[in-house]
Image 1 (cartoon, rainbow, N blue to C red):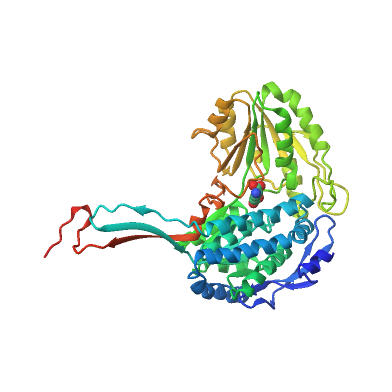
Image 2: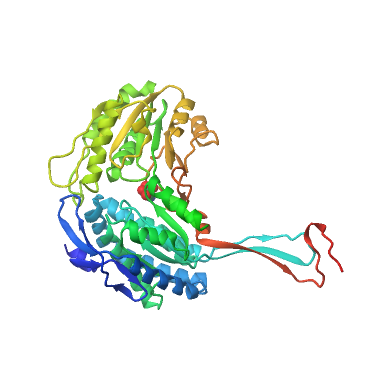
Length: 503
Ligand code: UN1
């Protein structure tokens, strides 16, 4: 595969890179396999705690100088990083497809998300605004400024092996932070290729070490990183179980966390919905990326007035999805990430049926090499235990409702709170869904599915989703520290709150 060599991926790759670029690692070798064929792509020699130490020390040292480079100058370097990603978009997108099984347009879309993030960060590098405030004391001035925070430890999941790191890294860099990345062991090659592209720009400018990479296990590298007091912020994406563990450790050392954890996203199709639109949106949200986005739609609330006519259309649409080689232009759904994910799919379906669900379509693992399964629809009750869990697979549970307020309450009655959507042409129902008494999620959409958010908005969710906000809007504030400054330019020393303290 020539894109691999163009990305600098060889048959065996070192799993750590610091100030001087990649360096030899001594841990066990993991083989990254193509989930569409089960064939090996290349191997990575893992890093351990000592190699982590080297990368973290480099990042901490480089931070001392990087923080003093004016933010717009940091932005200029990030602009070049964005351009380097543009140059390699096609190859990097192909690697995403090859390593995690996303279809071609989604692999490319993922790299585009990183490029968008770089562009956003460049603009932001001239806009890290603080407030100017009125002091209650005469001849005093008060303001807030935002300073670089430190080293950011970034833990990413397999399903967005490029873009979620970029959300953190592009913001971190313009904010004056340095970044150490621990990627998923299910997608190490994408991380290595991504790092190589971006690090080349930094090295050219004498800033090697501002981005570091450590491909290693959770027990040694992950734990060490999370406990490391030099990591001013740990930004972690993954399961709620992982996030709770990370959150506890970082809270103990009073560090900062930014958590983007599980979702269990619902779409409500109201009686007055544009059903053609709803159908297409459900298909992309539930089946796109083989249901392996944290924003994937897993629960469908259908108004009873439209359910009987709409369900057969949904079933037909699910059955018409072209499953297969994710590299092929007309494929809509590629494989799940690995055999463990296939087992998760099987067991969720088994549980759903044993808890009273009815299989409407799908439910089978395809009899061919690779981790391919069928898009699955199950008619169920919203309070079935399995419907309250996140299963990373293309399974959607269908419920019927008659009262919108009740549907919203059921939508909210799960532990997770990431994304949500309503399909309606009723202005009042849309507004009630978006009101304070409506969806409790971090993302709430009208006539748009739950997945595929743009980077301009703040991304993240409530409750067991972890409360973090990444990417756009003012998420940059998580990557900086705020300082309040009061300046006295007079010749007396008045005290606040009218306190007198004269000798
Ligand atoms: C994730 O699945 O962890 O909104 C992130 C989306 C993408 C990001 C998903 N922009 O679906």
